[in-house]
Length: 350
Ligand SMILES: Nc1nc2c(ncn2[C@@H]2O[C@H](COP(=O)(O)OP(=O)(O)OP(=O)(O)O)[C@@H](O)[C@H]2O)c(=O)[nH]1
Ligand SMILES: [Mg+2]
Image 1 (spheres, helix red, strand yellow):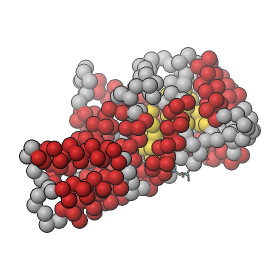
Image 2 (cartoon, rainbow, N blue to C red; image 1 turned 90 degrees about the horizontal axis):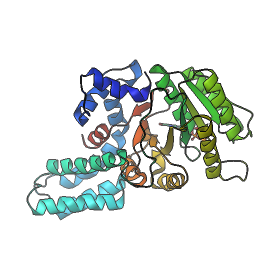
Image 3 (tube, rainbow, N blue to C red; image 1 turned 45 degrees about the vertical axis):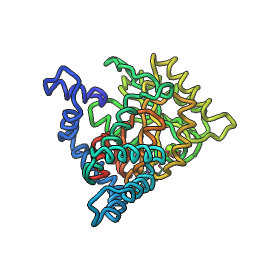
């Protein structure tokens, strides 16, 4: 079953003919599926271990031996949130809310304070998932079952993990029963084709490529024709983080979008922006430039396993206002998990 239909199908199989509650979704998501996707909740928790230790260390050092939530505790907490890259304004807002609740005696101890923070953070992620920030997110469209090929464009600056994510995603979608094809439209680096070929082989899916230096849009055109001819369900398109010609990268992406839409109605159906969690606020600035040029439908945050500043997830969700679909938690084929706001937030403070 195609991955985007799975959740809905799982819910139907649970006998639900209404929207699932977050708890029900969590249960469905936690159910063992095909081998490698089992226990994603635990895997997200593990991926944010360094961030959790960073936060817990700072919080514990200031509250140890204290009975009251005083100004000093709140100041340190604010610093801890900022140091985890949650974002200065967001951290300030959360602590302000906490301060008011303490004054009104609605908040009495550190556990209640943690609960408040978790609920605030989850609120930010959920708002982003709904794409509430107008103007930055392509409107959500229902994906008709008969769209073929379903075209996913993967965009982002160089080195963030686009190619690696494509390999993982191809593996994942294929293991869920769809025919997948990869298009090598990053023609910038000679090595890019080889790297993608390795991932295509690992995940066992065909790759359409041309010589390095070829016109990315021409490669895409070929891949679309080939995908149609071979009855492919999902075409995943790798794109360059930069170009060797003087053509503007954003213009090239726009041209690719136009070609995809001309050849397959509604394509690209998904444009995933890849962001490297390790680059923190700098990466966020680069990501902003993409959102100005390309309508993004979702985000993938890579290298969450490699940072103690995993709070950047919150800053990105708030700033970009698009749903985080997946997180990369390592360099192996199975190291891509569906993002869960609940698993993530619980992981920060468990
Ligand atoms: N630890 C860890 N490393 C990752 C993850 N995703 C990607 N990487 C590593 O990040 C590096 C860059 O990944 P690529 O997939 O080549 O990035 P790219 O965006 O395709 O780069 P360009 O093609 O140069 O634009 C590689 O060494 C990957 O192994 C992740 O989730 N966790
Ligand atoms: Mg690449």
